[in-house]
Image 1: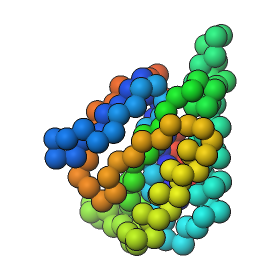
Image 2 (image 1 turned 60 degrees about the vertical axis):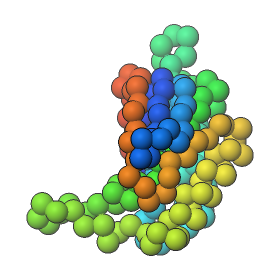
Image 3 (image 1 turned 30 degrees about the vertical axis):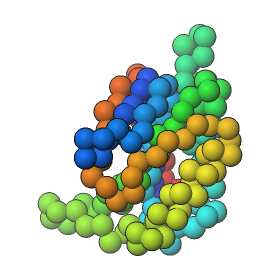
Image 4 (image 1 turned 120 degrees about the horizontal axis):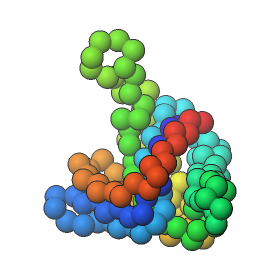
Length: 145
């Protein structure tokens, strides 16, 4: 499982020119499910994501989580995070989980995030999405579990 967290002051996700999701301050989380990942890995990843202290406190230190700032999360499925680029110039995605299982774990992650009291918005699983985001900082964290 791999996730890329980007701190944003806002983000909009569109599919076929139609706005699907929008958040204000918070995180855009690109979420990739690897073969063999399970619910326990999702639980560990979500706990890390919602508690990651990557928002500034009054002193300008990265001391606050998305929960602390009452931010939102835009959760985007992203199988390409599992790309293997070790050979040649065309990445292979054999490490990514099968779509049905990946969708199930992606949706489970969203439910868990909501359970922390965070407003979670979603991308469209398997769709060609356009995402406009205003990165804050920029702060980008790569989490691999």
